[in-house]
Every structure is written in structure tokens, then in C-alpha cells.
Length: 347
Image (cartoon, rainbow, N blue to C red):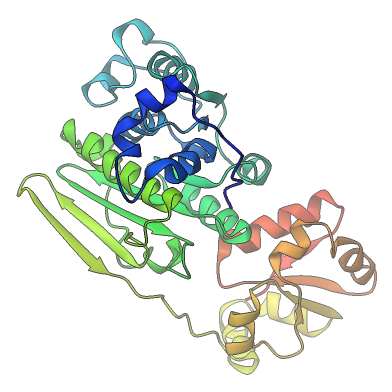
């Protein structure tokens, strides 16, 4: 949620953002929202190059950048936020310097680290929107889990060769990254397959455009849609996406499956006192319930409202965590381990 401040535009800001102020869908209120937004970029490469520059130019004052890579000469073919002078510099720092040169009013925080399950929540919770400019599924799974917990818009994009795709997750009861991972996440890493240099710039601008609309409150957006851009054919397609409903196994089916696939694991569960903690949201757990499971939504564990209760139960029971999303399960297991609670994955 964007915290609207009582911002009064200065004469210099009115002059700078005049073209926005003249738009009936933006005006001063919309520009105030833009200036109050806090956005976080995961990655400072090709996708981020155009998106970062245009969002900074639009007036967003609080920008975070997470990237632990260094600028290389091969990056300059598409990562135009960097330059020959910054080769060898950390990308997050190089991008920060470019932004400050474009708009001195921007407060840019560079996180020269890799996003992981240990630091993700600590960093992301300080922002309103996350912009995915990465190229690996592991990081995207973490982003998807944290944005689901925080109910935060997650602006997704991927590119390869001449094709790019853009969508927004966890917005207006829309889809999540889990809904596309099986059928639409078919774009390979551009380091392996190559990419035309202009493509990340164009797709990054699609991301920036959607972010501005979300911030201002324009109702036309890519929630529940995937925009696929083919730069070779100069063609755009807008594909309707649907939530992917995963049918959960009944407890009897789950036991049968576990017996046939991991007898030792099944025997351990069967012969011991165990407690299944279902960390799914209330909707999923009610539609596909697990018999005898204790429902504790993920956000309650993260906010430390249920950890003491689980720790007390762990004295008498073996704790098993259940969620249909492996990354969320792993995240909670690691969190419990930090609190000296041994937990295992159920199913």
C-alpha cells in the first residue's frame, strides 16, 4: 500500500512533470502517488536499464536495487544504464549513479548482494512494488512467496533471443508466478541463447508502463494477462491467464503415494506422533483440506505470532509443514530452524 504523503509540488517539480500533470488520468494526485511510491528492482541488467531510468524520470523518489554482479564489457550491448567508464563496478552502484545523474531527487539504495530466503523478507517489506529483472527460477520463487505474504504487486518479465513476456502477479486477486511456471515459463537464459540488444529495453519499458498505471490507479493493467512481445515479427499478443488449481491428494492417497515412493519416510510418520502444519491461505486449505492438519497461515509464522506455539508442540510432536508451493514450505522450515524448531516437509 502506497503511503500518500502531503506532498506539495515545487515550481521545479511542476515544470519537470508538466506532461504528467496535463494528463487527465494522472494530474497532481497521480503525480503525488508516483513520488510517494517505493519500488524495488531485483537485478540491474538489461530489463532494469530502461525501466529504472524511466521510472526515475517519472518522479519515483524511493528506489531499491538488488544486484551483486559487476559490469562487464559484454553487458553494454543491452544494459544501457551502465557505460564503458563503469566496467568493473558493481551494477547496483553503477545504476545508482546513472539514476542520480538523471534525477537528483531520487533516493536510491543499492543492495550489493544476492536475494535469498534469508534476506528477502527483510528487504522487500520496505517497498510497495517489486520489479523482477532476473533470469532464474530460484529467485522468482522467492519473490513469489514473499510478495504473496505481503500482498505486494510483483512485476514479472522474461526475455530470450527475440521474444519477451510481461505480467503482474499478486494484484487485484490476479494470478501468481505458480500459475505460469508449468506452461508459460519457457524462456531460456539469454546468456545461453543470446538476445537482441533492444529487446530488454523494450520489455523493460512495458514493465515501467504497467508500474506507473498501478501506482496511479489506472484500472487497465496486465493483472490476469501475459503480454508476449515478438520483436522479430513486430507483434504483441495479450494472453488471458487462469489460476492453476492444483488438486491436493487426500490423506489416504497421500499415504498410499508415500508408501510406494518413500517407505522409510512413511514408516517414520506412521510410527511417531506427528503434527501437520498447513501454512496455506484459508481459501486453499478450505477447498482442499488435509485431515487432522493444524492450519496456521504462513504470514502468522513470519510475523512471529505462532512460533512459540509451534515450539511448544515440537516438544511432543514431529512437526511437518505442508503447502503446495515448495519454496514457501522450504522458507518456513528454514525460519523454524532459526528458532531451533525441527520441521520437515509433508508430502
